[in-house]
Amino acid sequence: MKITAVELFEVEIPPIPPIAQYFPKIYDITLCRFSTDEGLQGWGEYQGKREVLAAQGAALVGQDPLALDPFAQPDAFTCALLDIAGQAYGLPMHRFFGPKVRDKVPVSYWSCHMAPAETAAQAEVGARLGFSNHKLKARSWDIVETVRLMKEATGPEYTVGVDPNTEFRLPPVAARLAAQLEPFGTVSVFEDPVLKENLDWYRLLREKSHIPMALHLGAPAGVLQALKAECIDYVNLGGSALQVRKAAALAEAAQVPCWVQMGGLCTGVLAAYSVQLQSTLPNATLPCDELPFTRVADVLEGSLKLEAGHFHVPQGPGLGVKVDLKVVEKYRVA
View: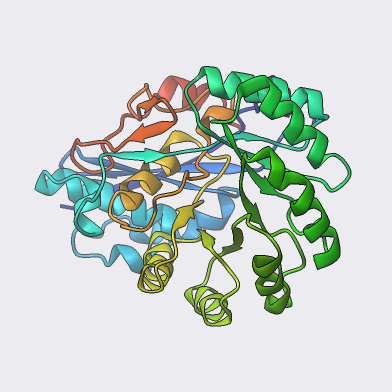
């Protein structure tokens, strides 16, 4: 088998209206398609412009996709090569990562920072769609009012993941807000509440609050450092599939649950790749942050099933999903 073409499709799919009023464009996305002389095609997704991958893709043309080390390639190409390998051997992609431990992967609904009433309205949407957790970009000046209105709109079973991207900055601010939020009983986690340079601050906050503390980390070395510092209850893992696997194994050894954000505001291609991986991670029990539903269209033909706040792990060979080329071409910009 030989690779006959590596095609790169840079697309711009606008966010749904509630997000678009704040972020008309989120970031660049490039889809890659590997074609072979035996008719197999593999897909991957890269968050960035197509030029970054062009030379590397051209160098793979003419090579045997089954002889290449997929994990030595850019992660979008890793996905495409594993997609081809899975189809060639009749295996779902998760078989390349390890034993499957779940058939469904939980996912959070998501909001950028909005006025409290707007966020509460979006929480109603999320709850109506069957989600049970709502990840939101929080700010110190209105997070308490936001959570209050969200609870009024959805009830106590709909939980809130508070992610201020370190905007709370200092432990006194985060501790005060935690004390105000605890009585609502709906805040599931504080993710990156304060500046991340001092892990002692996170350990201090764990002692001051019943709200679980989490860090958003990538490199396994950073996860190991946080575990040694005993400063987190949970961890949000990002990066390549290989990096997430290694970091999740470290967290599992310390009995720390995790969730995964390989793509975030991605399309279904990267979401399906992440879901395949997450189905093999025993401690990936928390709702993930793969969010293709935050855009007005997705490039899959409904083949990544989302139901009641859970992605169903695709069972077909390879990635197990089908890309709708009409949608790709509609939103293609390069």
